[in-house]
Length: 219
Image 1 (cartoon, rainbow, N blue to C red):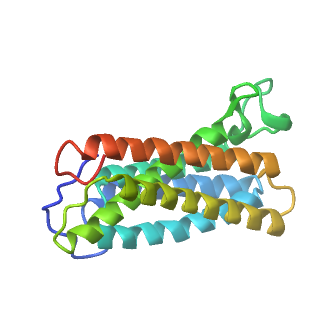
Image 2: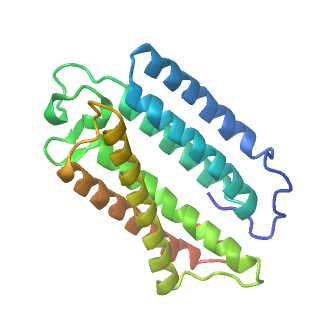
């Protein structure tokens, strides 16, 4: 997952490093669009639109920050997990929250841990790592090697939590705009935030542990 801090920055938006991950992402998004339209899942048509906006944003961040290929693939896998969560139907009889039928509502540990919460933790852990790479790039542009001090780790941890809060705002918008969503209520939002914090905390700890070993700017 590491990237060479001394390698030249990309000169264009689309570079060879983007092609495989872009192809993978485009493939599963095409399948997701077809499935959402086929089954009339308006909620996920909305989320796919949001994801397309995020993909464009990530592409520009990649150009400016020089994200590692590992971060790009992790972000893409997060998108895939999200698409699966809202579109894949679980078999009858499997434990789900309030009888919902999609993968997002599946209890991995009945009454304790849902698929949704694992995806939140993974995604905002990756987001925290991306924030570290962006911060490292800002330091590097000034000729300074970023070191994972407690203050900087708290900063990227808080940034990960902030992006997690934005995600909850997007879900709230879906509730207001679309009838019969699977977003859940206040307790669900609270557990989402706990999962976001767990992922961000693990990512910050890994950054602090592994970045300190050498001059690399990724965990």
